[in-house]
Length: 130
Image (cartoon, rainbow, N blue to C red; front, side, top):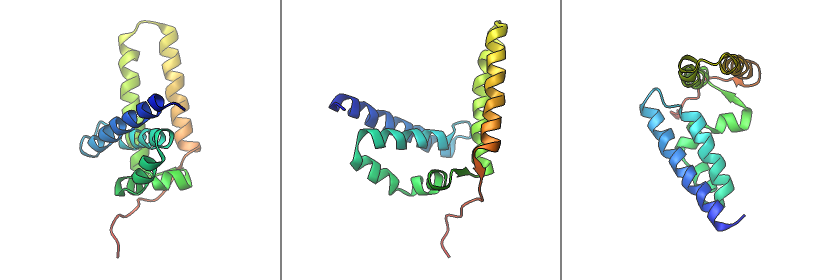
């Protein structure tokens, strides 16, 4: 992969990381998907940044369980689902096309199916050590 593409992955990774950190503060910004995007970009862009990111508390607290066990807490699932619903509702109500509305409803149905049946719901991970 050429250096420009790797640099773009790193830049997108840091943008996603920054937005993911904002998601910790702002309830409407989904933290987990943005951190997953950052992780993916760092894996594609630089082994050094991948190792650094996987060593951070942010990664361990929000992604490690999902990556290892393919599970999310109920709060993480609901946050992602509700944010996506709001984003899907915008074009649903703005556009007049019946085909687009049907497609958006099908996307929402599949999204809920996937999150309920394909991603396990795990326990809340405590960040405090005894």
